[in-house]
Length: 247
Image 1 (cartoon, rainbow, N blue to C red):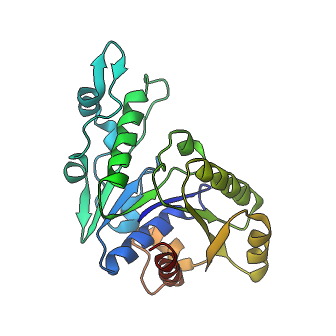
Image 2 (cartoon, rainbow, N blue to C red; image 1 turned 30 degrees about the vertical axis):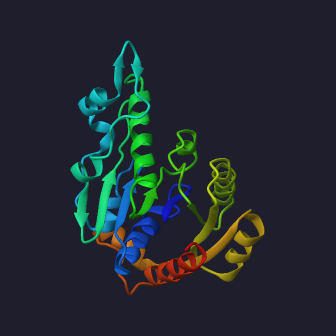
Image 3 (spheres, one colour; image 1 turned 90 degrees about the vertical axis):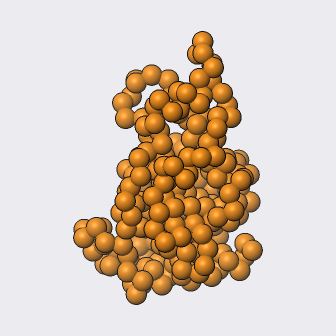
């Protein structure tokens, strides 16, 4: 199963991606967790050391993509990247995509080409469960990072801005031909917020997660979300649902 997690900034997609990776591992799966968010903090949510960002491997990317004269390969060698540039905890391997640090630092085409090739390899050639924590918002769709994934999870909060972003993500996910597009409603404080989301989104929401102070505490203490928290237990319920639907 290849799962992308997307949503408006602050909706909770990193928390959801990290818990989902831990739950798959807990149930006997090998997992590749991919951090494609420029904030690069999925490692903290997983309690892991952050690996070196792939986009910052300038010499390696140049060596494997450049054909000279401003031309570059569309299919560079990437099959050794996961083993060389990931960190591991149990049966979870974490890889960080990284981003270009300086606007105007030159053409980013080789970097984007390399990252797309790496994700294509991870989705099509690897057998592990793959969980991608995407960049917040919509920009990553223009680079096609979630292409070839078979599940898109859209994280939505009970606000008009979050719902507007979520519905746009749904449309863009369909354009990428992602077959299974589902939502998680997060930070729910009362039932009317569920009704508000249900009435305004264009996709099925499989799980609603109440606002949980344990998530806030984990962010301040740099600890992972505890397994006995409401948030984690709701994510376990979501895991069972997607396992039943997308076998």
